[in-house]
Image (tube, rainbow over all chains, first blue to last red; front, side, top):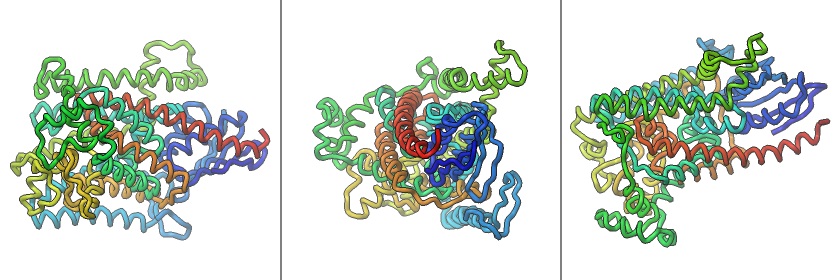
Length: 81
Length: 493
């Protein structure tokens, strides 16, 4: 697992290789740490975690502003509400 | 088989803008073709193989649905406690109600293959151990199978751990005999089991024959004074009282504690009123149910398929004039690993863990370790060759069905487990194996099937699973907090 600051207000969370529940827990904890408006790029390759992260954002109001997928690897950008 | 650049791709309907490499499609056709060949080839050899093929194709459907809906029982309460997501709790309740509805029709026609299990506190304890295990493992018993179909190496370790642990635990004796209460020992001996089972030796044997078998076996229909096969018993007792009312209530709790606030915030943000009427609450409840269409659709198909599975298997039993697949295997000339009662594991519905224990039991037996002197293998389930074990056909096809879906959605990827995840997988798998044997089933056999068929022990197992999931999440919250703290330290927070 890797978490780092990419630029001002932009962060990266790399949880490739992790299975449930790790990607969604790390995503939740990372988002809790950020300020409103900050963008978190989450990189994961566990399909079921995507479903949970998507629902979690829908409930909390955080917005998924970008999604891309190459093979089984997903890169999602989430903007904190 | 994950996609790469410069690879010929095919745009499949519903594949969500993620082009699928042609080789993925070919692999998917290959898997389906292989299963079709197995079914046709074995049928041409002997029509009794139809029985095994029915298990195979229902297993395939389960795999397709599980992967499509990311349907993992583990995440139902784990994701509620960990990240506040009710998606899977909703999906499981939809599947349970649908399975119960189809099951009620099957039961009312007298063609149900279901037998309720003994009901007592042991189901809660077993569910608790299983619940902790499935959070550690990252997936339940059925979830691990479908994730293995996605190429997930951690899931393969979980399956191995569940399988080996069960085979060892079911036969454990020696010093563990000293932990058996005298009353269990005496009660087990009084059951008059065949000498070959040696019921006075082995912790699980004495737990089963000395304690579990003494517990009441009932259904909600019988509690209400109806027979299971009566219309009132099947539809009012087992379906309405046993499933629909508790499932609706459980989802209402989930809505109030996990979903309502988000729905309200959205309404207010969209210009709606903050004060909710009963109609608004119903709208919020429905929105929660429909929040993940994939999960809801998977739950719907799973529920219907699980009910039809019982119906078709019972139909074949009537056609072939048998009550258990053990008779068919003996007619086909296979007599190795058949239980002392002439039976093999043949639930007649979806099940996961026993066939996993069986193949390891078969390997141990072949290696010279006696595994037929206990109740689990020797008296009830047997340890037939995995190649002709009906339930093993179901599990292998489940993995295949999930692989086909993962390939067609470009989600298949061989993932090598890290040491950290492998450790959790081994611990979690072992706990699930022990929980399964104590509860006489896993999240499918002891929870999903039993709850759906009006067996009160199913809800007790589920209650334990919820408690276990809560403890498992507490542990992982602590674990991930430690790791995140190190990462945060390098940023300017």
